[in-house]
Length: 315
Image (spheres, rainbow, N blue to C red):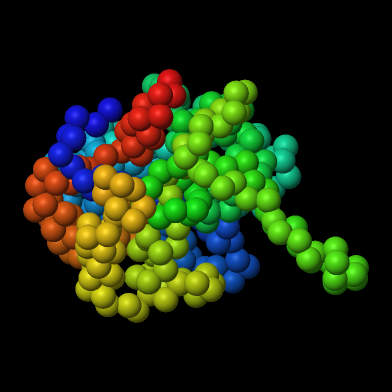
């Protein structure tokens, strides 16, 4: 649980340690080459260690969360062990970065069970958090996380700077243009208040938001066969964007929460933020955040989720 009650901003840094797994799962493409795969090896042997160096330099290595696919844990045990030794929280991130929509429900269950076992062997304890590879999460994923008693998920963006309870809402019904228009001229059922504790019998799964607008890879690294990467954006542009996001929340967070406190989640990847043109920016931004002193607090996702439940009297 957090002990710094002066902090208005809770900094939630996370790192998706995909390494080679993404090229096996969501980023698999028949035209991927050894050049593409080499970036995954870079993530393991170079990028992760550069990031750890920065995190240790600013004494926050044990106040961040790494979401690590099972394939990364078993393929690159040495760099993963260094992360565990740093005191960081470990969360699940698929085995081979499989997207939920790529799998049957049975396969999805088998993958989650395998990853839970791999991560528990690594850390010596039950892992409490999950992030869906490429944010590919569906109703069956949420059901599995509830069934296995996960503390939190970090794959959705109903909000961008406040934790909330993961809703049980399904996807909106798609239009069938072969039917009369009256068949789709109706509203979708949506949870109105995401901070209401789920009814009895429903596991209170906390959601810590994340999404495409809170990460590094899309702007700062280019992959020929991943359509939403750019890769040639100046790192200082991204740095200023992150500062602008933080400063807007600092000045206006009471719009979302009366006491003006907020969570500031950022997602980075070793294969991206470990690159030479990015790692210096990451260090500058971490230093800038640290200069806010006790007005900010770096927190693991586990800490944020547990505090959210405690605040609502949920054990």
